[in-house]
Image (tube, rainbow, N blue to C red; front, side, top):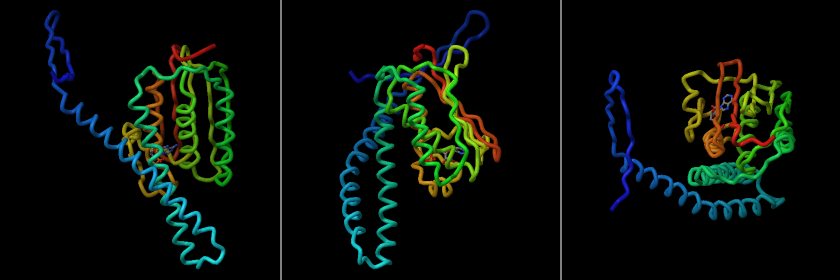
Length: 260
Ligand code: ADP
């Protein structure tokens, strides 16, 4: 009585003939479910120990008479604990996105308002990089969607543009109409990405330059999250980039998700 899953391929031959091949992918499907469950459980289980570790580290670092060698050690531990906490948070968000069906929350989100809020936070993050950040709101259409998830996706794209652009760069954030669709885009004039990496960027933990990305403090899950948030909103992520010239990440929302 086990449910079975098939992947089908239909090939046409000449005018009238068709060949339908069905592959039984039940085992793959079940393994994928097991993987998701496993990652979800591990992430949940790691949350409490990480909170306890952070608590103790904060308490020890508060002592005024702490030996400088110990302070440096604790500081390293705190950085790594924060990194792990962020990875666990992102893994949990990804697993929530993967498990929720396509029918997600449909609240009307005032995009100009939300983007201004996200942009203000980005300005704070940009303080040490000192890029020129521009926000251009050219459409007043709103989205039917999930605010928290959209905030994560848009924030990831803006912070990536900031991280992967050498000091003094120019970053352009836009919300604009494109035919029936509406698009959110982030363009930078940063390090750019070679074309053969582009298709793989939304895989979990895929990085063009691992050392450099890790130094910037990312989790390696940002673009996977953006991809899933867009799927959840029946939209898609489009990436264009040129090495040493810069990149554009564009989130396209279909008209079914827009409100005039
Ligand atoms: P990370 O936490 O490493 O930034 P992401 O999933 O957000 O993880 O991004 C995956 C990889 O894509 C990054 O490690 C980086 O190599 C590349 N990348 C993302 N955004 C940009 C950008 N704006 N310019 C250049 N490379 C980028």
